[in-house]
Image 1 (cartoon, rainbow, N blue to C red):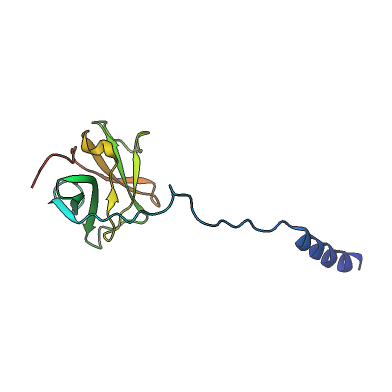
Image 2: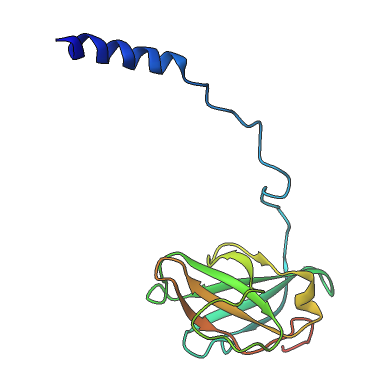
Length: 151
Protein backbone atom coordinates (compact mmCIF):
# COMPACT_ATOMS: atom_id res chain seq x y z
CA UNK A 1 0.00 0.00 0.00
CA UNK A 2 2.93 2.30 0.73
CA UNK A 3 4.30 1.68 -2.80
CA UNK A 4 0.89 2.52 -4.28
CA UNK A 5 1.12 5.98 -2.74
CA UNK A 6 4.89 6.51 -2.87
CA UNK A 7 5.57 5.56 -6.55
CA UNK A 8 3.08 7.99 -8.18
CA UNK A 9 4.30 10.81 -5.91
CA UNK A 10 7.97 10.02 -6.67
CA UNK A 11 7.20 9.87 -10.39
CA UNK A 12 5.46 13.28 -10.34
CA UNK A 13 8.32 14.86 -8.35
CA UNK A 14 10.88 13.36 -10.75
CA UNK A 15 9.06 14.76 -13.79
CA UNK A 16 8.74 18.20 -12.21
CA UNK A 17 12.42 18.31 -11.17
CA UNK A 18 13.99 17.36 -14.49
CA UNK A 19 15.93 19.90 -16.50
CA UNK A 20 14.35 21.41 -19.61
CA UNK A 21 15.43 20.10 -23.02
CA UNK A 22 18.05 22.45 -24.54
CA UNK A 23 16.99 24.13 -27.76
CA UNK A 24 19.28 25.08 -30.61
CA UNK A 25 18.57 28.14 -32.71
CA UNK A 26 20.13 26.51 -35.76
CA UNK A 27 22.94 24.36 -37.02
CA UNK A 28 26.52 25.50 -37.08
CA UNK A 29 27.67 26.89 -40.41
CA UNK A 30 29.88 23.86 -41.06
CA UNK A 31 26.89 21.51 -40.72
CA UNK A 32 24.42 23.33 -42.91
CA UNK A 33 23.91 22.19 -46.47
CA UNK A 34 25.31 24.44 -49.13
CA UNK A 35 23.20 25.34 -52.11
CA UNK A 36 25.94 25.47 -54.69
CA UNK A 37 24.94 25.13 -58.28
CA UNK A 38 26.94 22.70 -60.37
CA UNK A 39 25.49 23.13 -63.85
CA UNK A 40 28.48 22.51 -66.10
CA UNK A 41 29.07 18.87 -66.99
CA UNK A 42 32.79 18.27 -67.54
CA UNK A 43 32.38 14.60 -68.48
CA UNK A 44 30.17 11.58 -68.00
CA UNK A 45 31.50 8.02 -67.62
CA UNK A 46 30.11 4.56 -66.99
CA UNK A 47 33.45 2.73 -66.81
CA UNK A 48 34.87 3.96 -63.48
CA UNK A 49 33.53 1.09 -61.37
CA UNK A 50 34.39 -2.47 -62.40
CA UNK A 51 31.77 -4.38 -60.40
CA UNK A 52 28.87 -1.92 -60.63
CA UNK A 53 27.06 -0.25 -63.48
CA UNK A 54 27.22 3.25 -62.05
CA UNK A 55 27.10 6.34 -64.26
CA UNK A 56 29.36 9.12 -62.91
CA UNK A 57 29.07 12.77 -63.97
CA UNK A 58 31.77 15.28 -63.13
CA UNK A 59 30.23 18.70 -62.58
CA UNK A 60 31.78 22.11 -62.11
CA UNK A 61 30.50 25.42 -60.72
CA UNK A 62 31.52 27.40 -63.80
CA UNK A 63 32.73 26.41 -67.22
CA UNK A 64 36.43 25.62 -66.75
CA UNK A 65 36.63 27.05 -63.21
CA UNK A 66 35.36 26.53 -59.69
CA UNK A 67 34.90 23.53 -57.45
CA UNK A 68 34.26 20.01 -58.71
CA UNK A 69 31.35 17.77 -57.75
CA UNK A 70 30.26 14.29 -58.75
CA UNK A 71 26.77 12.99 -59.36
CA UNK A 72 25.81 9.34 -59.64
CA UNK A 73 23.06 7.37 -61.27
CA UNK A 74 22.46 3.64 -61.22
CA UNK A 75 19.73 1.11 -61.81
CA UNK A 76 17.43 0.41 -58.88
CA UNK A 77 18.67 -3.17 -58.66
CA UNK A 78 22.15 -1.88 -57.79
CA UNK A 79 21.18 0.20 -54.76
CA UNK A 80 22.48 -1.04 -51.44
CA UNK A 81 21.23 0.06 -48.01
CA UNK A 82 22.81 3.24 -46.64
CA UNK A 83 25.26 3.60 -49.52
CA UNK A 84 27.92 6.25 -48.88
CA UNK A 85 30.56 7.72 -51.19
CA UNK A 86 34.14 8.32 -50.02
CA UNK A 87 37.17 9.91 -51.72
CA UNK A 88 40.63 8.52 -51.01
CA UNK A 89 43.62 10.46 -52.32
CA UNK A 90 46.64 8.58 -53.61
CA UNK A 91 47.10 5.12 -55.02
CA UNK A 92 46.55 3.21 -51.81
CA UNK A 93 45.40 -0.38 -52.11
CA UNK A 94 41.89 -0.74 -50.76
CA UNK A 95 41.11 -3.96 -48.91
CA UNK A 96 37.98 -4.83 -46.93
CA UNK A 97 38.04 -1.74 -44.72
CA UNK A 98 38.01 1.98 -45.35
CA UNK A 99 41.45 3.61 -45.22
CA UNK A 100 42.14 6.14 -42.49
CA UNK A 101 42.43 8.99 -45.01
CA UNK A 102 39.01 8.35 -46.61
CA UNK A 103 36.92 11.52 -46.84
CA UNK A 104 33.15 11.18 -46.72
CA UNK A 105 31.49 12.97 -49.63
CA UNK A 106 27.91 12.07 -48.78
CA UNK A 107 25.14 9.62 -49.47
CA UNK A 108 24.86 7.93 -52.86
CA UNK A 109 21.83 9.71 -54.26
CA UNK A 110 21.02 10.27 -57.89
CA UNK A 111 19.42 13.65 -57.18
CA UNK A 112 22.31 15.44 -55.50
CA UNK A 113 25.85 16.44 -56.42
CA UNK A 114 28.60 15.62 -53.94
CA UNK A 115 31.29 18.28 -53.63
CA UNK A 116 34.82 16.95 -54.02
CA UNK A 117 37.64 18.14 -51.76
CA UNK A 118 40.11 20.59 -53.32
CA UNK A 119 42.85 17.95 -53.40
CA UNK A 120 40.79 15.84 -55.82
CA UNK A 121 41.69 18.30 -58.59
CA UNK A 122 45.43 18.00 -57.96
CA UNK A 123 45.89 14.40 -56.83
CA UNK A 124 44.98 11.04 -58.24
CA UNK A 125 42.59 9.08 -56.07
CA UNK A 126 39.65 6.70 -56.00
CA UNK A 127 35.96 6.85 -55.16
CA UNK A 128 34.68 4.20 -52.76
CA UNK A 129 31.08 3.05 -52.53
CA UNK A 130 30.50 1.84 -48.96
CA UNK A 131 27.38 0.22 -47.55
CA UNK A 132 26.98 1.38 -43.96
CA UNK A 133 24.22 -1.14 -43.23
CA UNK A 134 26.26 -4.10 -44.51
CA UNK A 135 29.55 -2.61 -43.21
CA UNK A 136 31.31 -3.45 -46.46
CA UNK A 137 32.96 -1.82 -49.44
CA UNK A 138 30.65 -2.32 -52.41
CA UNK A 139 33.01 -1.09 -55.13
CA UNK A 140 36.15 0.97 -55.72
CA UNK A 141 36.66 3.13 -58.80
CA UNK A 142 39.66 3.13 -61.07
CA UNK A 143 42.29 5.70 -60.06
CA UNK A 144 41.30 9.10 -61.42
CA UNK A 145 42.33 12.74 -61.35
CA UNK A 146 39.35 15.02 -61.88
CA UNK A 147 41.07 17.97 -63.53
CA UNK A 148 42.14 15.86 -66.51
CA UNK A 149 39.75 15.99 -69.43
CA UNK A 150 38.27 12.60 -70.38
CA UNK A 151 35.43 13.63 -72.62
